[in-house]
Length: 78
Image 1: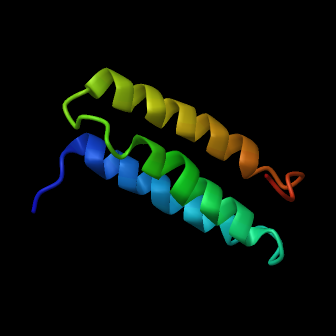
Image 2: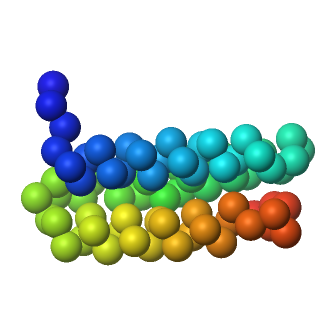
């Protein structure tokens, strides 16, 4: 199955989120992983794959959140 460019970007963002979660302390790592997978990506899983403007908006939002949460000073999220 071939993926579109947006689908590849979403998967790349997801992988980046999981990689960044591995850099966090072991006791708070599950919080980052659950935030990345369950609360953000699965919340929008029903989004129509042809709704390009919404997907691009969510990708930009996700990139900004990833930049914030990947900062070394951020130890935990709830």
